[in-house]
Image (cartoon, rainbow, N blue to C red; front, side, top):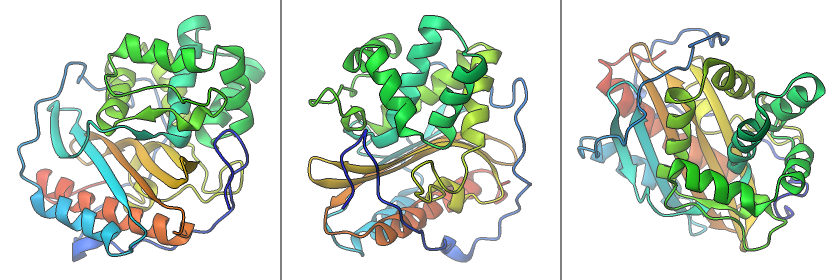
Length: 298
């Protein structure tokens, strides 16, 4: 059984992705970052979804519902170039963040003291790339715990974000998919190059095995394998339920998307079932994004 957030998570493996729909997709090799690599111009509120991907949403929901264990799915995808919502499902409803809250911890640190250097830079990078819980717990305690979430929610206008009830369990903070994408829009459109590159270079470098041994290449990394991506994943337990989230930036051949797919499950689910289902659901969204970009993703 996994422990609560801020403690050690369980070690698991993840089954391979089955790409939905038989879509032929052209990929480029996942590339390194540089100044401006993830810069985008969607700083304002994106235009509402046009309901043009109903079949993809249905397929994503089916991927989870078919596995039982009382899954709950919420998601949003924003095209950062057109500044429009591509897909949305219950995107304003908050769910536990798990390690996705580490984005707020890192942003709050940068706001207070700038881009870290030396060993501090390595530690924060590890918190984002390898999802190092020890670093997150230390920064959470040093910088005010729940106040971190409150400061960032106020600054960024995160209407459906709140700190954890148990102040020591940072991963039980709650955010909606739309709020998570507001964070990514802030990173890509509003941060100076140095700050944005520091964060996205860490997220581009997310290894398959996280610091606690969890295979974190579920969802976006599997569904968009070979593409340019920068992710912050989340997994664990909160309120007696399993939590599994895949969030991040994805570069297609012609556009950049921000993606947030958030789920919770009954504690009866095993991690392989949940991660495989979430990856299949994310793959269904990938097919719609390919349609939006003339059938080619990289």
